[in-house]
Length: 195
Image (cartoon, rainbow, N blue to C red; front, side, top):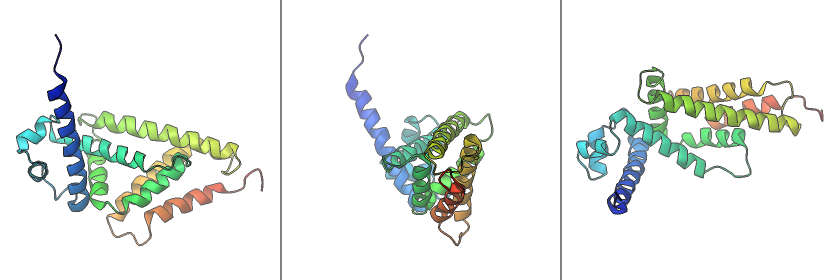
C-alpha cells in the first residue's frame, strides 16, 4: 500500500520549523525558563500538538540537542580537525548560554540508564571520543602534538574539559572558555619530534 508523501513532507517540515524555533527560544531564555507551552506557542501549536511531533518532552529536548549538534557541524571549518572544531564550538557556546544550560542539565539527567535519551548521549560521547582520538593521532603523526599522550585518554579529557567549561560558564567564569580550551591544547603540544 503506497503512502502519500505530501502529509509526511509537511510533518518533516513542521518538525524542522519547531526545532529551529526551539533552538532560538532556548538559546535566548534558557532551558529552565522555557516551558513546552511557550515552545508550542512560539511554533504556533498547542502543547499537545508540539509533543505529537516528538512523543515526549524528553524526546523534544533530545531533538533540540541533535539540531544543535547539526548546526554546530555546519559551522565546522573543513580544514580543521575534531580538536580544532571542538575548540570553536566551546568558543561559540559562550553566545548561546540557554543551549549550554539545556545541554548541561539534560545530559546530567540522561545519565540515568532508564532515561529515554540515555542512549543518545552514549552514542554522542562515543562518536566525539573516536573523532578526537583520531585527531590526536593525526597531530602526533604530524609532529604537532606530544607523541607520548594516549589518544583515547586525551580525547576523554578534552570532552571533560569542554563539558566542565560549559558548566563553569554558567557561574560567571572570568575567562573565555574557548581560550581556556585552546590553552590546554597548546600545552599538549609539548615536546614533539621536531623539538
